[in-house]
Length: 304
Length: 250
Figure 1: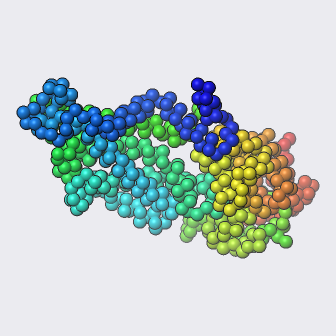
Figure 2: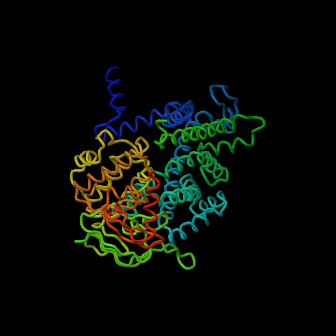
Figure 3: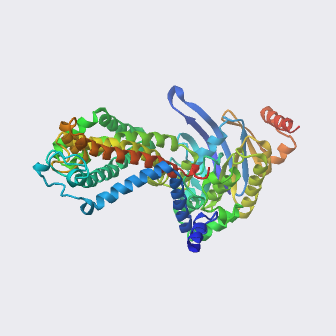
């Protein structure tokens, strides 16, 4: 008890004595800010729950997600040991949902690792460099923006071949332009401030200025945008799956599960509804968490 | 020897019909260890001269020699270790997401200063901030404290010349005096050369030996601070400035 109190005091000290203590203190204060935001914590819990469910899917699943049993098809939730019922091929929806969480999280992580990063690089470089670099990069961005997203993704998948990785790649390639726009707008407001001039006068080169000084200021608005887009990303992945270009059957991807259940939606509502609720939950959780993260990433508001 | 020699400096913004001449045919020298003031109304081009010397304005012509180095379009790394600048608004001149420690250590890192940890503590001491401020963010500091951090950043590489762009005008009066006294002390201790821009004759009179008076991008006259104190200005514009600043006291 007294050691945890001591640790707390050490972390919350007004005058940290070392760089390490200051860094841990900043993290701890960020955590406190996040914790005081009930909705963000709710989002974090839902996501943690989903991640754990995905990791421990083999232990938690009651059935083999791929095992078809035509005698057991379209059972209602709770019937015959199937917690969420079975789909049109008699597969256990609960088990498929657990394994599907792996795919959804995998999609989200891959897209998040590609699209905002590409957008951030393109946008900040264009905004900071200005001149013909800006014109060139932003016209390329406009070209990508001008295509309807799903059509462009379809074209990419058609060129690259069907499959979940290619679907993710296609979504990422179509998702980065808005991030580039945001990052460029932020960069334009930042590049002529005195603190950028100040570091320039210390002899910092453009790479250091962009990566160390401009990126940290763009990230909070990008994080918000990413979390807002998360639902759209999952749904686009589902849409590609539905068109037969994303996750291939019998893969238990949530979007694919919905599109399979669509045929029975009037008589057997749970087949489409339960994966729908899962998509809704993960999207909402990302939105709530993103909102809380913005407060954490913006230290100006932390001691209000 | 002169620390700064400016000859026929012209600075403009925009081109073609939009071209605005901010500075016209300005020449002046600043001796080593001297403190030179630039006064004038806002828009007279005094800050532009500082920014041009610092390399923040690319559109200029004329000759500038600073610390023995003839200046071209680009500034060398050596230039930045000899010349530093303090900006007007301490609320805008510090990165909002970086601690004091990060600001100072990055400046030192860029200038390959050895033994950064002990230097930061002594630097904070120099500018009158204790080491307790080391891991604060700018939003946790007052305006005066921020300006002290900005001065510490400028001193991080041990420069010989400081360009001061109205370093006190964004601060309230009692804090202004503190910062001015700090600048006086630092100049004595580090044998610095100053060019200071201000619209406040009192501030310039406190810190500078010679003053260049500017109007519409030109020098109206250059006079010593004693001449100014004795109200011995030759040009009517300078006299007008002096009168209005005296009237503001009464």
